[in-house]
Amino acid sequence: MRKKIGRRAAVLALVLSMTAGITACGNDSGKTEDNGSSESGERGTVTITMGRQTTANPKFPEGDSYEDNAYIRMVEQELNVDIKDEFEAESGDDYNRQVSLALSAGSLPDIMKVATKDELTELYENELIADLSDVYEEYASDYVKSIYDSFDGRALEDVTYDGQMMAIPATSSDAGPGMCWIRSDWADTIGLTVDADGDRCITLDEAKAIAEAFMAADPENTGNMVGMAFDARLTTTTSDTAFMMNSIAYTVGAYPRHWYQDENGELIYGSTTDEMKEALSILKTWYEEGVVDPQLGTRTWDDITALLTNGQCGLLFGSWHTPDWLLNNVYALNDKAVFEPYAIVNEDGKVNCTHYKATGEYVVVSADFEYPEIAIQILNLIYDDMMNSAELLEKYPEVNTYLNTGVDGTARPYNIEVKSNTYLLDEYSQLRAALNGEGTKEEIASAEERSNYDAIKAYQEGNGDVTGWCKLHSRCKGVDLLTYLTDNNLYNWLSPIYPETTTTMETNWSNLQTLEEESFIKIVTGAEDLDTGFENFVESWYEQGGEKILEEIREQIAE
Image (cartoon, rainbow, N blue to C red; front, side, top):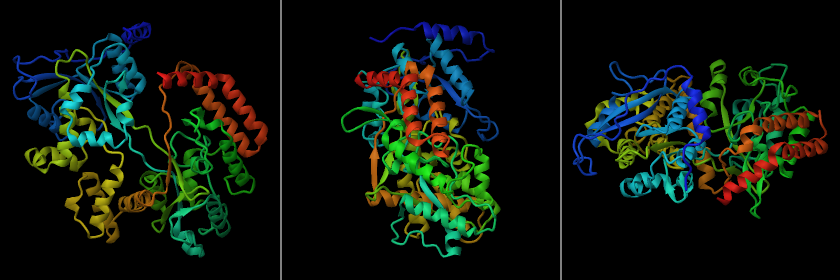
């Protein structure tokens, strides 16, 4: 039995009622012009109220708006609906505040997006949202179902409560491991062979040796080289975040900041394991030997980026897309710079990697909405037909213009990502075929990849700019490496547990994260002894709420 609106919601409603005015259109939820059947052509025009997440610069053509734009007009015509925005708010706190207000009042727009699993759970427990199990099974297209099926059940499982599908989940595809990006132009200059066997993989010892070689050679004569630089946090929840030690930790079987079950079914927090101690020991040794930045823990993110752009560091760990938003700064100051990514392998020659949480955001349908199947029909239209049907884009050329000119995705009725777990590799295969002359640009399904094709071709022909350099590096090197690892079965996957926020997390998690970050920095820099420091950290972590959080997550798993 789900609980009714509780004290938390009532208090939240009182608080929000005291905030600055929030405007909204009147809710004429589910009203129709006649009492037609459930088929869109026969049921009459259905008015749908939406909660819309917006952005400050959606890039609309003149005259278009969130309530009246190419996407909305296509959906209204195809599905015989009339979309009205009950509220609009920019992404982030403003939008989340609107969702909280709707939840507290117990009155939702017919369809809206929520950002967290905690909000989804509260909506479910308060019986505010519709069970979509039957309409998904009946109305979802085969293509849409195949997208969710590509996550081996993890995506739909995340929105299932007591056997009921309570939301349409956005998907969050695996992005692969953090890679070791190396200045290959430097390696060529000093005569350093990085990958003698050509397997595109290196060990931790090899990564260290490369950093030492760069320090000794100082290819750009800076006089102040740094082998490796890391952010003060050291670890993060995703392996591919730049300037983190996750790739080092994963190699020895440590999975910091992740919850998972070991081979015996025991729940583990990865930052507290013996393997994590081993990973810290490796970094500590490198620090003592001068390979790791001597100012570890004191440099800001911008400071570390400056080491790269100033030619003081030629090796870093980061995602396949690091060139798009970080290494581009290097190229901007030195257009001769070239990077090459390599996978870091464990002692068995495998790349340890974690599955991402399969979902990130959720589209929910009000329990009071008479036609929940429309939410699935919108899903089909936007994430199947619009992506796969040339005929549809010919019928709605202004939608095609939106796709090709970068109108923000918030213009859609609901803006979530719904792509298969392998979409990155699938789209890249089309891009690679076109670049290699084995296919054409027109055969590339994604508008983004068609744009990447143009940028890369221009760069290769000598007419490009930083965009072409970035896309060549991120796609033809970064994603190409992910393709290689997949094709050669070099992954060793871990499936973490992604719990909902527990009661003790709400009160203690921030302090526990600070404890972890400060303890790890002290251990690596020698302010604390490895054995004593790590033992004290683990003991304090359990005492300051970690043990209670483990108990609460075990209860979630049991439920």
